[in-house]
Length: 141
Image (tube, rainbow, N blue to C red):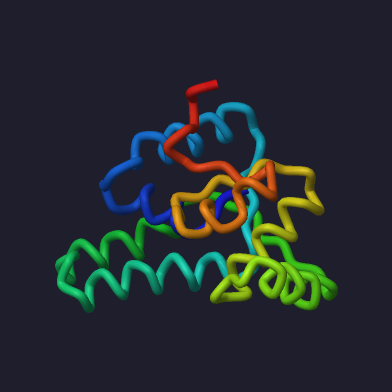
Protein backbone atom coordinates (compact mmCIF):
# COMPACT_ATOMS: atom_id res chain seq x y z
CA UNK A 1 0.00 0.00 0.00
CA UNK A 2 1.19 3.51 -0.80
CA UNK A 3 0.12 7.06 -0.14
CA UNK A 4 0.38 10.15 -2.30
CA UNK A 5 3.77 11.10 -0.86
CA UNK A 6 5.24 8.00 -2.51
CA UNK A 7 3.37 8.44 -5.80
CA UNK A 8 4.60 12.01 -6.20
CA UNK A 9 8.14 10.58 -6.13
CA UNK A 10 7.26 8.43 -9.15
CA UNK A 11 6.35 11.58 -11.04
CA UNK A 12 8.78 14.22 -9.77
CA UNK A 13 12.40 13.21 -9.31
CA UNK A 14 13.34 14.13 -5.75
CA UNK A 15 14.86 12.51 -2.67
CA UNK A 16 13.72 8.91 -2.29
CA UNK A 17 12.40 8.68 -5.85
CA UNK A 18 14.71 5.72 -6.49
CA UNK A 19 13.17 3.76 -3.60
CA UNK A 20 9.64 4.70 -4.66
CA UNK A 21 10.39 3.64 -8.25
CA UNK A 22 11.84 0.33 -7.02
CA UNK A 23 8.74 -0.36 -4.94
CA UNK A 24 6.52 0.21 -7.97
CA UNK A 25 8.73 -1.89 -10.25
CA UNK A 26 8.95 -4.74 -7.72
CA UNK A 27 5.17 -4.79 -7.27
CA UNK A 28 4.65 -4.83 -11.04
CA UNK A 29 7.22 -7.62 -11.52
CA UNK A 30 5.49 -9.70 -8.85
CA UNK A 31 2.05 -8.95 -10.35
CA UNK A 32 1.07 -7.60 -6.95
CA UNK A 33 -1.03 -4.48 -7.27
CA UNK A 34 -0.23 -1.52 -5.10
CA UNK A 35 -3.28 -0.32 -3.19
CA UNK A 36 -4.31 3.13 -1.99
CA UNK A 37 -7.27 4.92 -0.50
CA UNK A 38 -10.01 6.17 -2.79
CA UNK A 39 -8.88 9.81 -2.45
CA UNK A 40 -5.33 8.92 -3.61
CA UNK A 41 -5.54 10.33 -7.19
CA UNK A 42 -6.90 13.65 -5.94
CA UNK A 43 -4.20 13.88 -3.28
CA UNK A 44 -1.43 13.16 -5.80
CA UNK A 45 -2.65 15.75 -8.29
CA UNK A 46 -3.15 18.27 -5.48
CA UNK A 47 0.44 17.78 -4.30
CA UNK A 48 1.69 18.50 -7.82
CA UNK A 49 -0.61 21.52 -8.07
CA UNK A 50 0.72 22.87 -4.77
CA UNK A 51 4.32 22.52 -5.92
CA UNK A 52 3.44 24.39 -9.11
CA UNK A 53 1.69 27.14 -7.11
CA UNK A 54 4.72 27.53 -4.83
CA UNK A 55 6.99 27.75 -7.86
CA UNK A 56 8.97 24.59 -7.08
CA UNK A 57 7.71 23.05 -10.33
CA UNK A 58 7.28 24.74 -13.67
CA UNK A 59 3.85 24.57 -15.25
CA UNK A 60 5.22 22.32 -17.98
CA UNK A 61 6.75 19.86 -15.51
CA UNK A 62 3.55 19.84 -13.45
CA UNK A 63 1.39 19.27 -16.55
CA UNK A 64 3.58 16.36 -17.63
CA UNK A 65 3.52 14.84 -14.13
CA UNK A 66 -0.28 14.99 -13.97
CA UNK A 67 -0.57 13.41 -17.41
CA UNK A 68 1.99 10.70 -16.53
CA UNK A 69 0.12 9.78 -13.37
CA UNK A 70 -2.52 8.01 -15.48
CA UNK A 71 -0.02 5.29 -16.45
CA UNK A 72 0.45 4.08 -12.87
CA UNK A 73 -1.66 1.13 -11.85
CA UNK A 74 -2.85 1.46 -8.27
CA UNK A 75 -5.98 -0.25 -6.94
CA UNK A 76 -8.22 2.12 -5.02
CA UNK A 77 -10.05 0.82 -1.97
CA UNK A 78 -12.93 2.11 0.10
CA UNK A 79 -15.54 0.65 2.41
CA UNK A 80 -18.47 2.27 4.21
CA UNK A 81 -16.88 1.74 7.62
CA UNK A 82 -13.53 3.29 6.69
CA UNK A 83 -14.53 6.89 7.46
CA UNK A 84 -15.64 6.38 11.07
CA UNK A 85 -12.70 4.08 11.77
CA UNK A 86 -10.30 6.62 10.24
CA UNK A 87 -11.87 9.32 12.39
CA UNK A 88 -11.14 7.22 15.48
CA UNK A 89 -7.51 6.68 14.39
CA UNK A 90 -7.07 10.39 13.62
CA UNK A 91 -8.38 11.27 17.08
CA UNK A 92 -6.22 8.64 18.76
CA UNK A 93 -3.00 9.94 17.20
CA UNK A 94 -3.91 13.61 16.83
CA UNK A 95 -3.57 13.48 13.05
CA UNK A 96 -4.37 16.72 11.25
CA UNK A 97 -6.28 14.97 8.43
CA UNK A 98 -8.58 12.00 8.13
CA UNK A 99 -6.95 11.22 4.79
CA UNK A 100 -3.79 9.89 6.44
CA UNK A 101 -5.85 7.76 8.81
CA UNK A 102 -7.75 6.24 5.88
CA UNK A 103 -4.50 4.77 4.54
CA UNK A 104 -3.78 3.29 7.97
CA UNK A 105 -7.21 1.69 8.28
CA UNK A 106 -7.13 0.22 4.77
CA UNK A 107 -3.61 -1.17 5.27
CA UNK A 108 -4.73 -2.81 8.51
CA UNK A 109 -7.78 -4.34 6.75
CA UNK A 110 -5.54 -5.75 4.02
CA UNK A 111 -2.80 -6.84 6.42
CA UNK A 112 -0.50 -4.84 4.15
CA UNK A 113 2.66 -2.84 4.67
CA UNK A 114 1.94 0.85 4.18
CA UNK A 115 4.77 2.80 2.52
CA UNK A 116 4.95 6.56 3.02
CA UNK A 117 7.39 9.41 2.53
CA UNK A 118 5.45 11.49 5.04
CA UNK A 119 7.94 11.75 7.90
CA UNK A 120 5.47 13.60 10.11
CA UNK A 121 2.99 10.73 9.82
CA UNK A 122 5.72 8.19 10.45
CA UNK A 123 6.91 10.01 13.58
CA UNK A 124 3.35 10.29 14.84
CA UNK A 125 2.22 6.67 14.40
CA UNK A 126 5.27 4.62 13.41
CA UNK A 127 6.11 3.19 16.82
CA UNK A 128 2.49 2.27 17.56
CA UNK A 129 1.55 0.95 14.11
CA UNK A 130 4.19 -1.52 12.91
CA UNK A 131 2.86 -1.85 9.35
CA UNK A 132 3.77 1.78 8.56
CA UNK A 133 7.15 2.04 6.82
CA UNK A 134 9.26 4.90 5.51
CA UNK A 135 9.96 4.65 1.78
CA UNK A 136 13.61 5.49 2.47
CA UNK A 137 13.94 2.04 4.02
CA UNK A 138 12.53 0.22 0.98
CA UNK A 139 14.91 -2.45 -0.26
CA UNK A 140 17.07 -2.47 2.86
CA UNK A 141 15.66 -5.71 4.27
